Amino acid sequence: SMRSPQTTFGLPLLFTMRYRYIRPCLGAHLPSLLLCFMRAVLPLSVAFCTRNSVSCYRGRSNFFRRDANVNTDSDASETSELPDATPIDATVIDGPFSVNKFASSGCWGRRPLLVRSAFDANALLCGADDDEEGCSWPSWNNVALLSCEDDGESRLISHRPGDPSSWELELGPFEDEDVCNILNGSKDYGAAESEDKWTLVVNDVDRFFPSLADWVDQEYSFIPRWRRDDAQISLADIGGGIGPHVDSYDVFLIQMSGTRTWEVGKRLVSVEEEFNSLVDGLDVRILSNWEDDCRRGNVDRFVLGPGDLLYLPPRIAHCGVALTNSCMTLSVGCRAPSANDMISRLAEIMTNSFSGKAVERIRDDDLLEGDLLSNSGEITEVAKDRARQLVRSAIEEYLDDDDKWDEIFGHLVTASPQRQRINYPAPLTDGDEDDLGVWGNAKTAVSAMLEGNGALYQAEGLTFAYSLRPSGKKDTKKSYRLFINGEFWDVSCTTNEEEVASLLRILTSHRRLDRDVLAEGAPKQEHRCLPSDLVALLEDLVGKGYLYGSDE
Image (cartoon, helix red, strand yellow):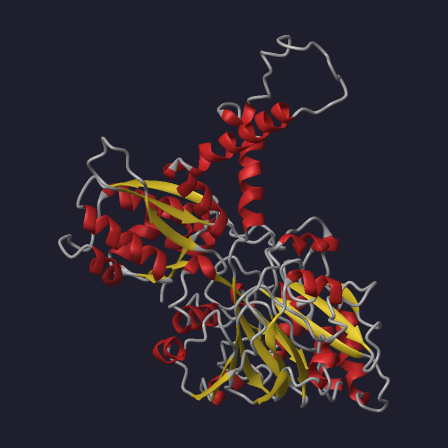
């Protein structure tokens, strides 16, 4: 079926997935890379990194602004006001991980939490055993190969132990030879204490592996869709790490294979303190005062094995170092817009406006009244007050309009981070029917699903959400907005209001949509008799590539 792994040279391709857009592009990499993998005794000397603030892709230099340890001064605008310096002790509990256990710990947004045996270690190890037959999770080799792809997001970070000024950053995609060199270089790892340590981090991995996207969606369903970020995977040999740093988001660190020690700070670090404490002249963010905190006893130390989970709230400094070879770590991150993000989005909208307060200018109709030109060089208090009021009224015009703000906020929190995505998601074209059959046409795809033949899936890596659209005083019926990837659709309740709301809830919270799942939202409707406007909506989403069909 379309969801079964594809193979080349007898090994699973990187993209062992159902998604129709994936190209068998890695076949070109495999011959040369397989030789390197066979020659390399040890895997990549690479380590783990978590994400930081909202991405801002402005060419290669700022490619990973949202990821931890990438130094861009633009994040300095985040608030630096934090609670008092009362020590924040981590909580340690036994698994398995569950929503109830996590909620009862009271750690969300407050303090670190270590969950021993949170997940089945054997299931996670499937991702560490290179090219294990039937394994749909990304393997070590898969992650390395993804770093060579144009639409993969990767970076190499190198350093010499004991030299805080030696950290260097290189952005992918990388050439096959680069990966080979890293592999071959790792064979002699540990021969000298001063030897450079290489770190490879790959973002957006769940976009290429539906099984991983499904797992994240299932295990972290308690986090709103618009607050979830990507799944990031790192690989490391002994000593691999990216140094002490601070993230601005909640993050869940799951050990897939090998062991890693985590040093976790006991206090919140403000943005101001972070920037004042960074090692100068680096492209990565390294805290220069970390050893001081360690000596003062302000750091907890934990060793994580396969299946263990470490949750970190925002602004808690941490440092991870691999204790074994073949150390593989999964990071499930969250995102939350800052005031800076929202104001920037609002300013963008106002800049492109042609009406309203945003296009008004300062007026001084009383300029010629009173003392004429008594001091032409002075900016008067009256002028400053008028300017302040004009700005305030322009902003309030949007903030006080519930409908406008619903649109602005929904766009902001569902728009894909500005990542290296090439023609993704790809819309259907006329020739797709020849290759994909019924799934290559929007109408036949939706019809097949409603008839019970196959299912529609959310395109991996996109955020689906909906909101109740604010109603005016004269409105008698409720209406909703569906947000996907920064776009929105107004969905009116031409039929049953509760039914429409239920269908939107299912559409946004289920990665897999089939006839039976949709029937849960429309119990009064026959399977094939969804309201015509909702059927048209599904067809539009399939045509845009936001939903895709599969026989499974």
